[in-house]
Length: 425
Image (cartoon, rainbow, N blue to C red; front, top):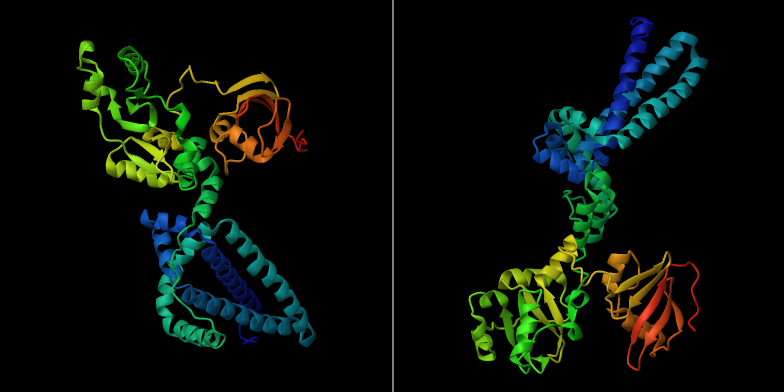
């Protein structure tokens, strides 16, 4: 063969074989590096290369068998051809040198370089390769099948069972990572909304409800003027109606039903005839569950009760939606009532403020596991009602008790987060 084929022809054939080796090596890495979700998306959009690549990857053992068959055939043929070329050029001593040079060339140009390129740009190589591999697999199927049977038989002896590879579902935390890593592909606002939706199962109605002591409603024990004042000054479309206290709730009043009611007709008897039945939910209900329940029952407001049936607070559909998209409106009367900025690194905070709301509005990282209010968190940490002037550190934030009475902390001063904790005093 060496005497019949010119040297230039042998070298040209060697280059072709090395290029084939590089193609097989790079395409293998590209196919295995494809993002399966992006691949499915492109396949559904009608991309031919993506559709074929998806079909091939349903049985990765077959496509790997095909690639290894072609790669080994190219490499072994290259080794034999180098031996012929080296012997023709320099005789027996040149064969060893040729083998060494071939090893370096294959390692760099047929393995490392194409595989690195494929890992960086898998779609650029995988989709064109799929157009070649799909028909080639059908042609060489008997050989590939026999190879896979032998390989799977060896794996079977070691306790490995082969199975079809299906696209696995992402866990919630994996999906959070995908959303985080989306970067500029998803705007920051939409990314925040998606993350909030994923967190709905972690947040309960207790975290966002209006607590028992802050519920505004109509007390039937009040006189008519006081009731009228509460109704006219209400910022909500639904008001709870009770006797003496919220635990003795009678029903819910939809203010829309009062639109056609004359002022002279507004009395306790009329109000009770307009009431609708209250909807109760147990504390600890995840927001994801409650959102579905609101939709199924066509309700917009629910009363949160504990295991004894005592009312703990009120949660509304709007509260849940605000957990996803943020505040709908800003009430000037309530804005910054809980936090007063004293300086660049000091804030006066109402201790009854909800910790989640403080974290959201001030971009803090106070612990949300456990007590829902700052007062509850401080009392739990100190295991007593602290006196004014007491200092402590909560998750790196220095906190000073400014005002307290016999049963709760009323006002605290919170500083910027520090790396060293402040020892409670």
